[in-house]
Amino acid sequence: MPGISFDRAVEYYDETRGYPPGIDEQLRDSIIAHLGLGRDARLLEPGIGTGRIALPFIRAGYTYVGVDLSRGMMRKLRHKLTDRAQPVCLVCGDVMHLPFADASFDAAVLVHVLHLVDDWRQVLRETRRALREGGCMVLASDERGGEGDALPRARVHAAWSAILDELRVPPEQRRDGAPHGLDDRFPPFLEELGAEVRRTTLVAYRHVARTAREVAHQYQARLYSSCWALPDAVHTEAARRLQRWIDEECADPDTAHEAPARIDAYVARWP
Ligand SMILES: C[S@@+](CC[C@H](N)C(=O)[O-])C[C@H]1O[C@@H](n2cnc3c(N)ncnc32)[C@H](O)[C@@H]1O
Image (cartoon, rainbow, N blue to C red):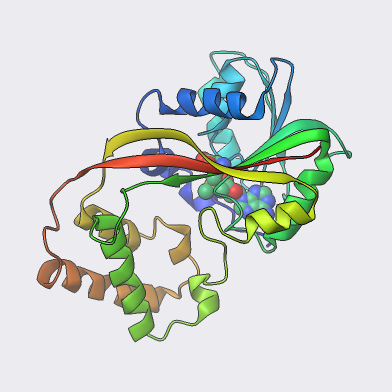
């Protein structure tokens, strides 16, 4: 498998990763402004999923093409469009080998896909190949839960990592080498491909972040793809220890924080 198919996440992906109302449209408008896209722009999204990013573009009439390993995720996207008769081109395929001719698109949008593929450099090379001269790419990432180690998401993540250390889980089962968010390795690699790259915040908003218990539940229920490669017995034991941590060590497991959130991005532009 050239990446991680989200077939198993189809039923809960939108509920667990969705944005508050209106943020998806703000994100679309910010991408359009940052990339300077005209109404006739042809856009590509490798790893389109259920259309969390794509739908506002499609509804606004942009030509939008998506590729994904998971037919289930794309079927979900299509269901959201049935009453609207909006055209969308969805291709079941591997983003490391895009089934498009060179220079087919004006812009590409990549969100939360590069940590899932076997070779993220190959995805960026392929995406670059599919862009016309003067094309551009946005690599965006959700920065939720606010800054700092004291917030529930960061605390639970630290506790989970410590448990996996105790259980001596090897790096390949934890996907340790996978890029994380807006990884520092992306800009130099895009520059090697000839792009000018800058980092920006596309959208900033406030939301009620999950409590520590709710975040822990996401690990325990294996909702995060980082849990999928763990052997069942290891996951069961890690989930049990995380519950003990919630019950005995975690301060304020049920306090919900209003927290700042951002969607940050690298914007890469080819001359
Ligand atoms: C975390 S989801 C992100 C979906 C969407 N970009 C978003 O931000 O909501 C990642 C998607 O990439 C797909 N994927 C993972 N590896 C892939 C590959 N090698 N080729 C095509 N799609 C892949 C998964 O099936 C999943 O639907």
